[in-house]
Amino acid sequence: MSILSDGDIKDALGRGDMDIEPFSEEALTPNGYDLAIAEVLLPDTGHRFSEGVAMVPPMTRFMVSTRERVRLGPALTAQLWLRTTWARRGVLAAFGKIDAGFDGTLTFAAFNTSMDALEVTIGETFAQLVVEAMSGPAEAVYAQRSGNYQDQRGVTMAREGEMEEDDGEGIEEHVPLLAAPCLERGCTECCLETEMPLTRTDVERLAGLGHDPAAFTLVEDGFTFLTNVEDRCYFLDHGGRCSVYEGRPEGCRLYPLVLSEDMADFRLDHLCPHRADVEPEEGHRTALLQLLDLIARERQ
Figure 1 (cartoon, rainbow, N blue to C red):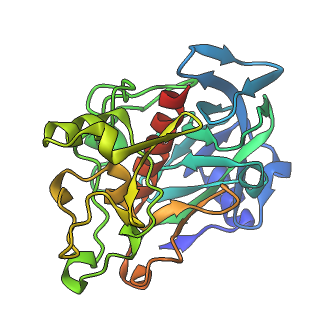
Figure 2 (tube, rainbow, N blue to C red):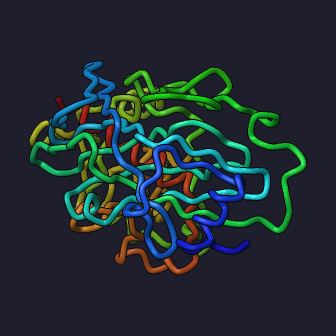
């Protein structure tokens, strides 16, 4: 797998191995191409913006569609990276890999982590496309494998065959568990003086196990948190074990993956003594992004 330089991208376009329409040489980077915003959707209100400026409220998710249609040949794939300008403004975004053979505009899911409204101007660059040459052409390209979003135009929400869009009532039970060596090493650092936020589903699940929400929850500034008893999580028993481990909150399932202090990216919590042994995947980052969005919406 090798990354195409700016010259390689122009050569691939000239040979017809890929397309970027419309193409502007000014959008080339040394190792990629900057994609611009054509449309913004606020899923929770249904408001769409295709010109001017979209105002994204604080702690709100939004969807972005690219102006450019991208087509990749059978021997090319691509990464997507949020431009650092947006990360510095408090934007988190979830990107997937572009499969060989894909053809269409691109839709990105993003979240305004700032406590201020975010101005998103139509036409601004949003993400960098980094094209990679594979070891050989794919036996079956994207349209032949799944093709759910082939030929898409504009912001496109989840289609049949993909995970259904969250309905706001909770996080799906199959949220990927981030494997951490807590149990086998007897570590309870994250259970001491915990500040773990809870969703309504978390509270309902724990209440269904026979626990009184009034005893294990603390509400501050509209958010619900796990409470502490003598600086220990309510559910940490005297033997140093989580008494509700199988039904623990979603945030606990994804720990030590947390928001960075500037709320511009994800990182492994420096308080976790075993963070060097944890390897989060893109699905974990996406799950945490969805979780933060749900917590913010439930507060509203």
